[in-house]
Image 1: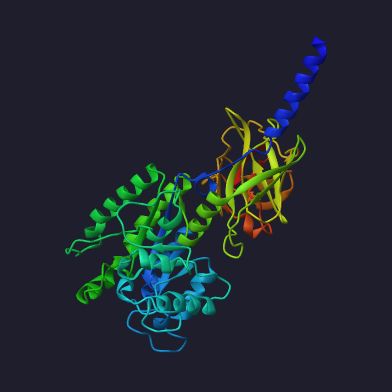
Image 2 (image 1 turned 30 degrees about the horizontal axis):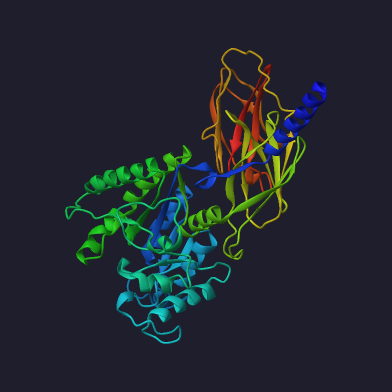
Length: 473
């Protein structure tokens, strides 16, 4: 009888352990970043395309650009005041930036009658027609983000905005919480930087830079979502011209570059997630709405279904989740609706987990174990040779690999995936003594490169060394 009870308890324990595989915890922000940040640009000004875009591109950041549709010039038309052209802002959208709405005419919305969507001079007209205008120009994108003119709104304006948009941005000194709900989405707060009158040199703006960096540091520490409001962006050499015209708080291209450099460093440390207002909205609303079901849970396969009740035409952003897996799964392959990733796993106090991305209502997520059997860390001691750790690591989209060669020799630097398949030969030539560096970008050698573990191996005579690097997408 005692043996039977022990046998039964053993079976129950094994079932309980197996059932824990697939337990899922969604992170506050994508890739389990500590906080979030959005660049927001008001009015659709030409300087934003000419000068802000190149800076964002340099750091691979995406911004939200709120436009006044009738004021953007068509191709070959004369520009209206300082506004840009539709072709410029369509280009921004095609490159992953967000085009949001700033109404048709920049009226004070609280002073307008409610009206209807077809009557000019009314609240509903300003909200609806701007959205439709933008979506007709950029049919591949849904316009879901709104910016209140003069940052003025009230409960009536908020209720009307809610009919057409998923959020409304205003002004406020405090960053946004990561758990917004209901009408809180229609009072998103963003900070505007006010500069001193004395701006005779580019360094005169450093005080405001340090102040805003401190504000952002506090936002990161508090796990919040910060935003900045930007209008004109110009090189310092053009700043005085705008100041003479009393243009509202222009910032210099140099100032924006400094800010982006700071944010890039914090992003590399996973302290902050830089993304558009629309995509952060998608993420948070999906996270708050999501439910999941474990379809299969074993030491060979974990299958999970994640769903929400949101509109799939808008809410299709991948959520990041820690998923419990067997302790001996050091590397896993994930697959959802044809997208495959290879990921490294982490052993925590509560068991081994993998941080994976999953899109709600996009089919089941399947997780299976894999073993890196071909690529191993082989080191033959040859004095003076040194293969350094790649930087940055983890990386996206590219990383730099450097090494030191004490003598001339034929040198081969290869990259392998977690299964040992060669994916790139970065060097295959004679090299004299010296220090070298090459860049590895998986997208240039692999179609749809998967997130996960890669290995790079240097061979030089009898010297062989392999190191591990991680691509995070």
